[in-house]
Image 1 (tube, rainbow, N blue to C red):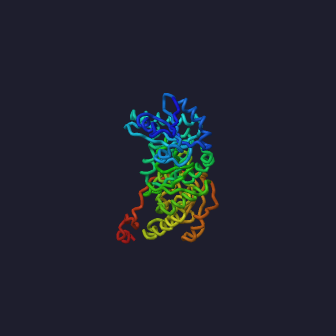
Image 2 (cartoon, rainbow, N blue to C red; image 1 turned 90 degrees about the vertical axis):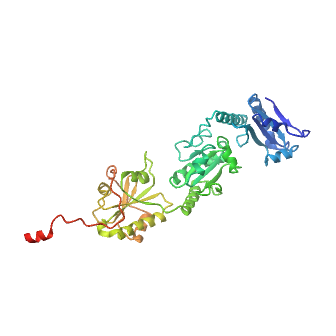
Image 3 (cartoon, rainbow, N blue to C red; image 1 turned 30 degrees about the vertical axis):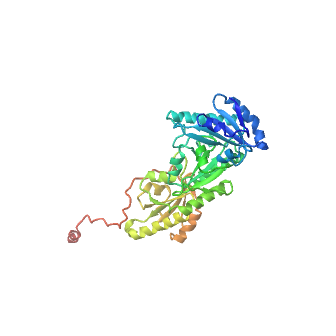
Length: 415
């Protein structure tokens, strides 16, 4: 394959005519540019390696300023790949990868492979859940979801949750430096803000182009209801700053957390215990409320309101709030030593450590707040936490006294 340079004597670029019918990679450069001169030997190596596979060309933007302007060239060198999709429509992909022959060849071949599979109707290998890309830049075991051109619309745009997305290049030194902090922030934001990453040099090029990504890493927050206008993150690139920004946004825009009644074990698993050794939250607060006959519906609702207010106040923390009526979860009560001092009783449970702490002060909102703020005095649960019983949910009504099983008049007559 030959490398073609277009000089100032040309009235029209033969490249554009070629690109309408064949795959081609073009660099737009100017002769005085130091980066262009540094790229030249690697670009020529790539051209030789791709001979018979794709045409490689170069445009002198000093001589062809109009052509450069038509393609939105703003810096040098700019590398673009022109190809034809399955429907015969020309596609233009910006190259943002490494400036080596190997990286250039990999980019061209991966793009052609993807387009060839599209013509077979198979698409690429990345699916809904996000498969590895960029050479597995983020491991599958992390909480960072790998996004691509294929799954971005469904995963992010159509999703009702808030997403925080990194647009990166695997060769980028700043991206490599951010990697551990991005994964740590994803763990901290779990179940509140979803965290993803798009490889702009691999299967995420179209998405990166759509959202105007020009440097790496670029971090954007996609809010529910406003996915078309993401918010650019301009803060520090450490875990604490990233998580604080996303959490504060989530707190300001999300509704109050739900306070759940413990009607079965699955409720506790889904929102506290988690599965596979991965707890959903760091602390689970459980209120054991008096029997409905002791408080009536209004009294019970007052206690639940205290929990709801606490859940709203501390919703940026890794907390979950639950309640159950006295005696309804007797095995759990025994495991956390509740019942000996009456009701209501409040405990904090740490699922990862299998430890609990008991509130011993006032059960008013003011008395409980320090316990929610910083629970202390944790002790280990003796043995494994028991499986919770399945019970009927409270119907929201006052309780009813059980009917007498004897006739009072008959009892008096016997006396």
